[in-house]
Every structure is written in C-alpha cells, then in structure tokens.
Length: 536
Image (cartoon, rainbow, N blue to C red):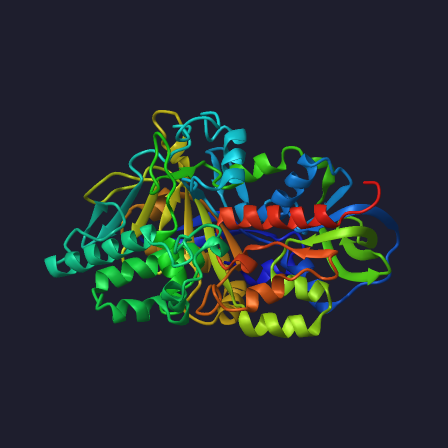
C-alpha cells in the first residue's frame, strides 16, 4: 500500500500527484500515500534510545489504542479505575478501525462494518445499546436495530460474465451443475451453523474460544479450506472463487493457505437475530468501524498519550517499568505501573519485552497479512448493465476485493460526488515480499493499478477520479493458517507474565474481527482487576 518516500516520512504522509493517460492526453491525479507511523515504529526494531528523562507512576498502562486496548480501558473506567494511561504510536486511537474525512463524506481506512451480533454476546450487545445501534431495552425478546445503521439496499453486487448481478454469490451465467455445487456448499455451511459438539457447545462460536472442542470439528484445523473443498468434491471454479474471495476479505489470506476450520467459521459462526434484522445483515457507517471506535473512546480521552512508541517493559521489584518514546518531544520517558496490558500484535509485544524466545516463536508461528486500502473521490461514474451502485461492489476474478461506497449510508438526495474505499489484500507473494514491494511502489503505480481494475466496470473512471489517497497496512492481521485456531501457540503467547503483564489482541484470538478484539480487551481488563493492589 506504500511508496519509497513513505518509509522516510516520520509523519507517514507523502503528498504527490500522479499522471495517467486518458484519451491521448495526460491527467494529473492528486492524492497521498499515507500509513501507520512506520519510520518511528522501526526505531523499536533498531533500538535507538537513550535513558528516560522522567518517571511517573500509574496503576494501569495499556499499550495500544486499537479496539482491544480501548475495550480494556472502557471496562476499567466503568469499574472505577481512573489511574490509567493508554499509549499509542499513532496520532489517533482506533487501530484498524481508522477512518478519515473530506468534503464529500467520512470514509474508512480499515474495517468498515460489523455483522448483527450473536445474541449471547451480552457485554457487546450492551455496548451496542449504549451507542444507539440497538434501540430496544434489555427486556425486549429480540433487540431492535437502528434502521439507519443497517446497511441500506442495494447492499451488494458482483460484476461477472459481462454484467452486474445482485449479491456476491455467483449466479449470472453460472452453469446449472456449478449452481448445484454452490447450493451444496451453502447447505453444508448452514448445517455447521446449527451444529453442536459432544460437549454441548456450538461447533463454531464467537469468541472463537467459546467453540466446541469436539474433535469432529477441531480436526478441520489440520487442513486448508481448499483441501476441504476438494475432499467434499466441491470443485466448481465459481464456488472456489467465492470462498477464496471471502477468506481474503475477512482474513487477508487465500483459501489455499487458511485453516478449513477458520474458513468454515466465517460462514457458520454468525447467528445473531433482531426484531428487524437477520444474521446475514450488516451494520455500517460512512467511516466504517471508526464510528464504533469513537464511542469506545468517549470517556477515555484523559488517558490518551498519542504518538508514543513503547520501547521496552521490564520488571522492577513489584512494578513494571514501561519506557516510551514521546515522538512530539523526541524524548524517552518512563512510567512505573502496577499492571500493564499489551494490546498490540505479538511481533511488537515480543520486541517490547526484549524476549528473544518469544520473538523466535512469533516469527515461526505467526505471519501478518499486508493490505492496501485506497480512498477514491469521484464524480459520476458510467455503469455497466445490471443492478445500480451498491454498498459493496466486487469484480469477479479481480485481485482486489472491489470497493465499498462510503457515501452509501448518507441520507441525502442527488449525490454527484462519492468516496469509494478500495480494498486490496496483498497475497500474491510472501507477506515480507509484499510489504517490501508495497513500500517501493509510487503513488502513480498504485493509481494505475486501481484504474486498470475499475475501468472494467466504469469506463470513465480516469476522468471521474478527483483524488486517490492510499494507505498501506503492513501487518494488518495475523493469518489464521492450519493449527492456529486449535493448536497451542495462542495459549502459550497469551499467558500472563508474573500476573502483572497481560495480552489482548486479535492475533491471540485467531480471528481478526471486531467482537474478538472487544472481548480480548474485556478479558484482559478483568484479569487486571483481579490483580490490582493498593489505592488506585
């Protein structure tokens, strides 16, 4: 998602203009290549720090202001804990729920929706009620969801065999035998959705660790999703494309690499039901999950220390010494804390702890998927035959996941300019190779890639584009490969250190979705409450 000069910019922002050919002339397309604070983050790897210039004391330090960290802080705050510090490298808290805004609308830089929650997720549903997403009280038989937040129609369309079709499951121009295979697959997923193990638990639940441990299901974690499809005789290219699209969409991981158990979990774990919504409905906002992050942050602003790179954490007698680099002041500072939550990916946590054994274990067992996300401001677009512009717009056999129309939920008439959020998981080569290549690409190269993809469906895309801004997520999420869900590595890495240092992140959940992040934070906060001592 990035360019050479991105890595040189401590602010993570490079303003450029790209020139592309259009009708025998050249157009300048403005925009930026932006990203997480890569240069500053690499200081952690390179260990360029002096001694701390100051020391303060606090009860709890949370490292990482993504959804897990914010969820943990919110719970502690609600329990009366006020002596909290949240340290985060970025200028804005929120992690991969990051978002932006221009004169057209807000737009997401990462996660852009959540499905209807499963009804047994009590704390999460309470949060949704607090946000106004659920409008009914707790006594209602089924939650009523705010109609303005349920994705409006038309929701999804797929460009396939020369025209748009409604929905993302291929059907236009698909031969009857392949349609039959697709239906077989959907029937199997429905059976898994209803299945329970010998232990009485749902075969596929959220959080993931609430799922059944019945070997009849957990053995699926020993093979890839593609292998499972082959075993089932589900060989339709249209079906295999669809499954691969889904695993790349949610996990940044192709179906020939992802665990079959996780792949099935994608289809079988959603069971939520509302009085006006079903499990397949989604909740979304122009800024995507940044809307939810903003609600998590509401009471927490006094605890924030942004642009703070945590360099190391060490045990000192009965406290933890947490050294962080204050980017704005270019100085190293120290906090002594009773309890700490590391709400960061494990490849970062291992370096902060200066734990070589953990570094090697993470390197051996966890790979992180890189992504490119682009926000494209356009004027009116030419359309192909079929359903009109939808919220989610996907092109069959494209390397991208298509685009989400960020203005879809806007309640206004006559929208003539739009923000399209374009998603491209970088999966052609190893994550390391993809990260290196992404950092070397120029803004012009990214624009050319995007235009070449979208002009298949919008013939005037070159002339319609006003601006393209690109973001690279170098380590967007852990790839849930076979053995990740039901092996031992997650439990080993999640174990608290001396009952003072706790971990909370979706790479420990094995599943990078909002609910997992929410409950990772909640679980860590409850552990902190158990071990806090003295006056807070």
